[in-house]
Length: 113
Length: 113
Image (cartoon, rainbow over all chains, first blue to last red; front, side, top):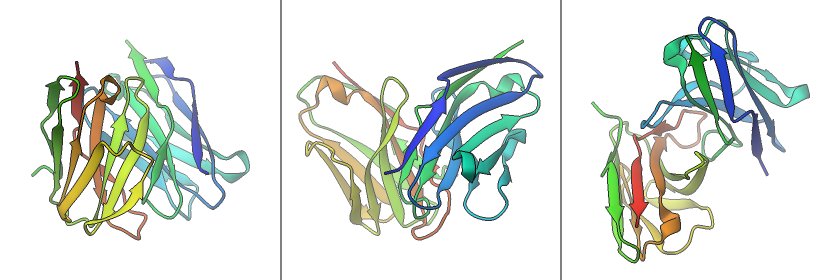
């Protein structure tokens, strides 16, 4: 069965600093991997996804993630944090396309001025 | 313009009552989902419908009954509401058989008193 572990339920960085949100997965088949963002009192919005091909994936708002099969990881990064990045971030894995997403527990990102 | 919409946005009710949440998508997708997000922000799939047919049922109590009158709508009816049903319920949709993104609605916050 698939599972996702997000290390750190809460990450706090200064504005302008590097953002690193960690995600490790387990899957018995090549996974599809996703990062979603949830702003307060809103639904989830896709940041980026990995299906096949290039392992470094670029998403919206300057975020990117790298699929590392040997480490079973899909960490999310952004070189320079902005106040508007404050939100809850969810990593998710799917086997067989986007038909069933299994989510990690989420990481709340706080940006300090 | 809203891609995935849900009504109502907030729902406050007493234990034992029956309530429904409605979801509509105008993206032309053929697959729709219900997810439950608990108080700790954990997201878990409940149901999935493809072209009005139930394809995923994740061991949800039978007090929960989804209904899909057509592929653009997926409603969730909950009987005999319990305190533990308090959560945010998200609807999502996508195209089947692809690696396409799941698009989420804004959520319905259900509070059972």
